[in-house]
Length: 284
Image 1 (tube, rainbow, N blue to C red):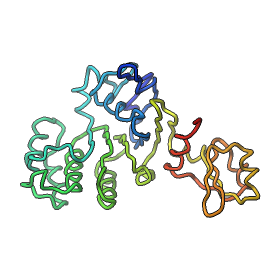
Image 2: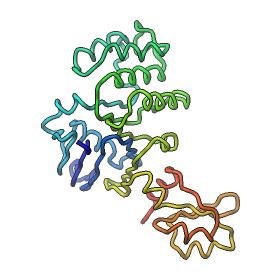
Image 3: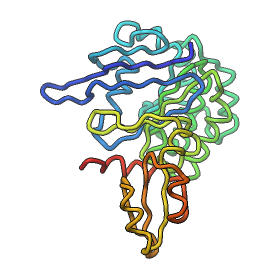
Image 4: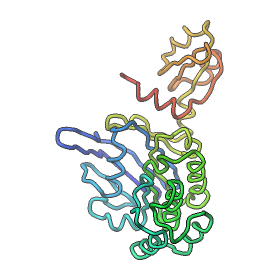
């Protein structure tokens, strides 16, 4: 199976409010996909649908299964990390390992103990006695010890300092990710993980407005820093966004060739954060 998630016409409404508006997207095996959007855009609803935690309209398959009817089978091969505060505060570390051993047939206890041995987390400590960074490490040790094909991360490093955030993603890449597994991640700290992503999905007001590989993004979107003398030429090409940097103008173009833009000034690939801002403002 090369496609782990396939959504076609995925929709969700709460009363008269339509949260997802017939979205289509897919996640292939061996990919790291960033799902990015402002609060209320529909990210969490997509994740809940994938995990079988909410009803929906349309067609959604996860590992070839229907989350609405086959959630138990799906969760044998899917792992999930949300905010680092979801573990019970009274739970001891060793009891957390015992619990996952009892409930998940694909959990490797020896592997979890190995991962935790590389941390400063005491096995007898309760979650409430751990720092946020340690709780994140515990979460990660549990997840990486499950033989999962898909890992879903919803703001997994929220509230952590930059050292723990870097360590979290570095360990995830080194110990979990390979060509047989995929990761779907939502985060507001997109600038910290953009170099890890293979694919990018932007969602706004319940609609997918960008779904592309990072290679496609690099070809399709180009920033040009121009002098004031060339500003009129750049604006005539219809940039999707412009901003001022140290007295010079930077224009973001979509679908314009590098050959056409090179005479105007310095060419750069936009950061995901800058591209996100441009796409969120587009048409408004």
